[in-house]
Amino acid sequence: MRHSVLQKQQTARKIFTFCVVYFLAFAFCYVFLLQRDILAQTQYKLSDGTTLYRPLLSAVLCALLGTALSIFAFRMLRRLPLRAKAMAWFPSFLLIGLLGSAHFPELGDTASPYRWVWVLLSILAYMALLPFCSLLRYAPGKRESFTSCAWPNALLLTLFSLVSIAISNTDIVLHRTLQSARYLQACDYEAALQTARWEASPSKRLSSMTAFALSKTDQMGQSLFCYPQPYGSEGLLPLCSDTVMFYDLPRAVGHHIGYKRGNDITATRFLETIAPMPHARPSARQYLLCAYLLDKELDKFCTLLLTRDSLSLSLPRHYREALLLHQELNPETDILLEDSALNVAFQQFKAYLKEDVAKDERELKCRDRFGNTYWNYYYFN
Image (cartoon, rainbow, N blue to C red; front, side, top):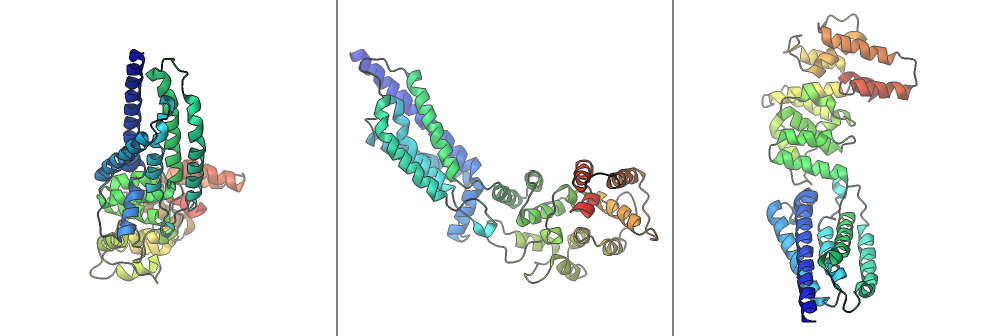
């Protein structure tokens, strides 16, 4: 009898340790990795930008505080059978999920603002399940091994983890926008570009951040159309009033090109105004050239380009693509670029355009083969 009691106590300690380790690992990963940027934006919004978010410290504190709450619940629910001890961890999982459930309509957040309904349903389901936990108790005298008790608790912990994720903010575009902002804040422009590369339908902020990262790495004329451009030139620059994010993008872009864009002026008009000004940076001209490309103003693009640059193979790829297209659309022009390799690709693109197939099929074939070119943007965007 005494051996049976000792064996049960040892199993209980192992189950408790298993639950603690599982929760600590999940809470740390959830706060530090999955919802890191959401929590940074939440703190920025609640403190009006007066405090600094520290992700590692926040993850450790949240994991420890959640564990402390679980230990308290564990003692309050000491009558739970060994196979259902994980039920004591539900309040901590719920609170961890609520931490990452903030809604940001000012950032174009499309996640459901009614996640509190799922919270309520989860609580009701938990309260309904508690009385049935006694059914998981072993018959008196039957040996309760760690293995036989661990898997039901593991299932419960996994279910609670899914509840935490379900009630959190899972808007993928918002996550990538905030993640890109974090990389820009750390001056890691390549990481910001890598984040944007995964998004097929970016927000306008993400488009602006991508253009900024391309300009900072001197890749705008080379790689701008490798990324979706659904907003045209308006996706290049943020408005000066766009300060609702923890990263001040208008200030960073304004410092980069020399001036901040106002709220009552189009991006192209703003760039045309500041480009000749004495305090404008060289990047302002680069922005203006790309704005003309996005607006499909090839005549203005060629005029501005040739004021300082000569026709050569050293020009960025998208500039050379635009020059070849300009030659095609204006056969009488005296602006001629000799680029045999690019010209071969352009002839293939024109052959695709002339294929006698449905418009959608033609567009799909061009995107598959030439999706990263200015030609594809010009004809199909």
